[in-house]
Amino acid sequence: MGFLDRYAAQILGLVRIVSGLAFLEHGTSKLLNFPPGHTVELMSRSGAAGVIELVGGTLIILGLYSRTAAFIASGEMAFAYFLAHNPRSFFPTQNGGDAAILFCFIFLYLAAAGPGAFAMNKK
Image 1 (spheres, helix red, strand yellow):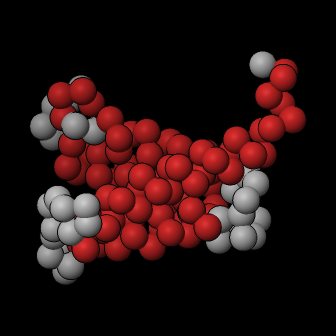
Image 2: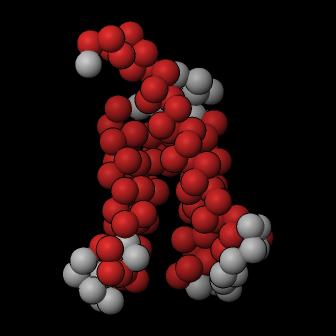
């Protein structure tokens, strides 16, 4: 779609911001119970995931060291899929791992492509 080529940096920036917001929401739900959901013990595997989601999501949204944050977030989502979702079933629609797979590959792409437009820095 050639007509969107000139907006590639802005679209990448929007994908980064929206993905970061969705990721941040997982962290705030786990650690701050906002929105109300499943809170976890801070000193647990899920608590560590919540910290990565809270800090990583914020950095990704801001575009501040977003490549590094996105790479770490991508790894966390790969671990989440294989440790929490995959043992329930091989199929993502049955094991609840759809979001983990999508986050993993979106963040891996952001780590490679960079933050796009609207970023505080290009790292």
